[in-house]
Length: 406
Figure 1 (tube, rainbow, N blue to C red):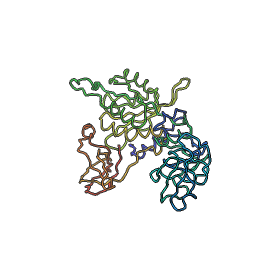
Figure 2: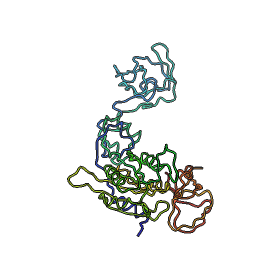
Figure 3: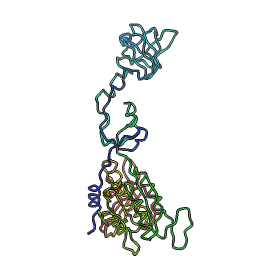
Figure 4: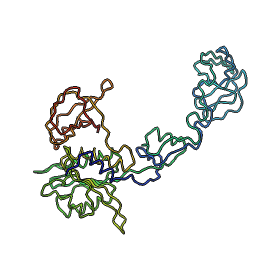
């Protein structure tokens, strides 16, 4: 009995576990999932400071919004004030520099006129605390800054750097081996002979897997020969994930499922009620006793290129995200507005390549002209796919459809 896509996701998530935690240099953590909460070891900022270039003054000297004050010091970023600001005094100060004791606001330089060691101030912004950032305004010592499970982006990495975290505990990227199979395949740079095609699937899958966070290991092409396939399968099983393209349908030379079984891979599911991608195979190889082998998650993707593309987006990407501890791991769809009419006569749900754009803050989607699972060039305008259920239906302009962004 074929699984539905939802059931396949359930089996996948029950099989794949987040990987172990490891420490990595902060500069190598982009896109990784934080393994534990991070609390601040200090206040941030660590001192009262100026938010502007200007003059640090006492608000009591600006009762009428204007004053002539004597400049007693220049404080640049990185320099510590040497004295207290008394009544009638000011300190020239730069953005980010420590606020001197006695001062409680900063007047922007644009609201002043300098004459020797005197500064004339005329402002409507003479309220205490203006342009001042107090110690601990952003974070106080002991505050939780980042929670476990967050994916690290630029701002989060910057916050960790500000807190002095030169290394960070994360879940690593998986090593993903890719093997294309088939006597008909030739390398991309070769001219195909009679009956041959270029190996576009491996290059496409590598791009998808890298974008999902995986580290790609290319195993090239395996011919439809049991010995050649088995040798390369053994190589692929040394990785965290192993993705094969082709050889999982019902043809005479579709040898992958039986060879994976011989190699100790346990089938989790084979065939899913979807189009394209019905023949997808997924299994797991447990560690072999008394060896240094580890768990390997194995995907056998159909050889037709759009089938491979869709199955990688749905299932391989989910496994990578789950391995890295990123939640939600499964693809998240949005409800988009269809921009044209479309009629379906389907025996199973189809993931139709589509173009998603935003107009007037609304997601709008158009199905691309596409001729099925072998038509990879038909997908070049697509950045998403629309899920159309397995029933006949006439869709109208303005109908809402479930859409997944690639």
